[in-house]
Length: 170
View 1 (cartoon, one colour):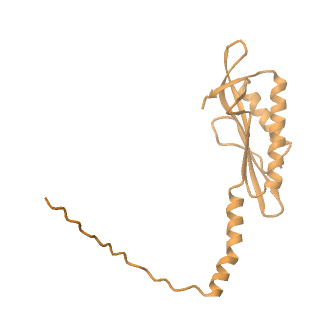
View 2 (cartoon, one colour; view 1 turned 60 degrees about the vertical axis):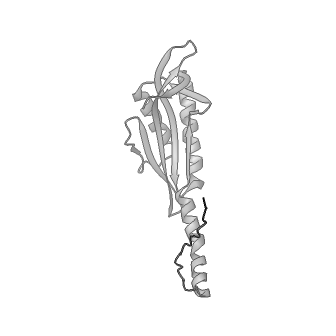
View 3 (cartoon, rainbow, N blue to C red; view 1 turned 90 degrees about the horizontal axis):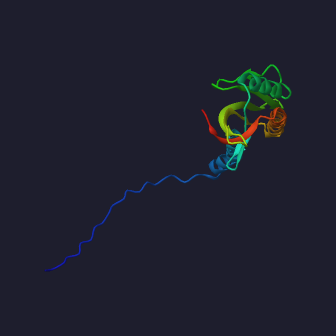
């Protein structure tokens, strides 16, 4: 038996592109910083929540009380003209803060339904607080989100209804 070796050649067409002139390259590179800045600012966001991978608290409060807590926390930081109710099935509010004339952050405070466990083992239904920001004004939005979240946490802890987080109900 004889083994033959065959050689296969693959022809790949090549495309010859015209060389860019110095002026064209300068124009291209002059737009690059603006493009990078735009992409970075579009993706700026922060989320603070009362739970994380290590656990956290579920607050066993009625939806009406949670809704009022969200509204109060948002009204202390968001201009009243931009504050509106969120479109989720659970209590939430949305507002906007600006920095200068162009930069704007959209801030959302929400209470997601969750299940918790009391110290005695009893399961309870309640809410987990989340405050998010997204936009181009991190200098204004970041501290605003932190203050709103701190107020929600403080008010929720004062109710004495916190229990260990088990999971989300939504």
